[in-house]
Amino acid sequence: MPGTFQQSGIDRSLSWMVLVMIVSAFVFVMILGMDGVQKNAKRVAEEQPVAAPPQVFEIGN
Image 1 (cartoon, helix red, strand yellow):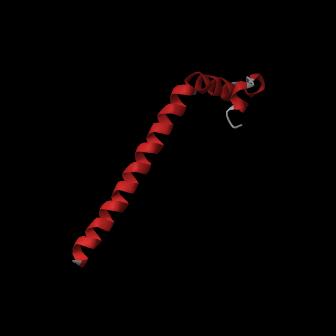
Image 2 (tube, one colour):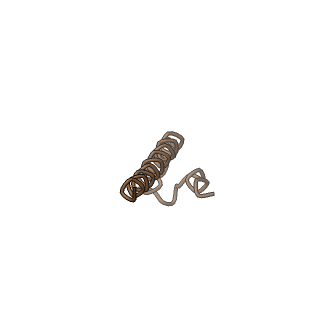
Image 3 (tube, rainbow, N blue to C red):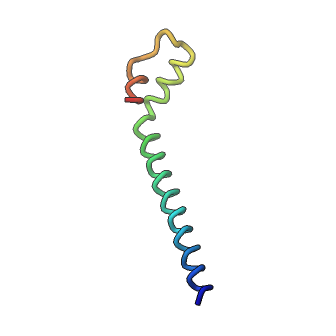
């Protein structure tokens, strides 16, 4: 009886880990998809910090 309870607890924590990983991966893909153009703007801003477009700073807000 205690063995099955322990097993269910392990499964629960595993499912939580998988759920968190899936949600974080989904958010990561969404951010990458939305900021695809912003990524290029960041790259240009890194090469030329003076000519950084205002869009790069709006991401943090």
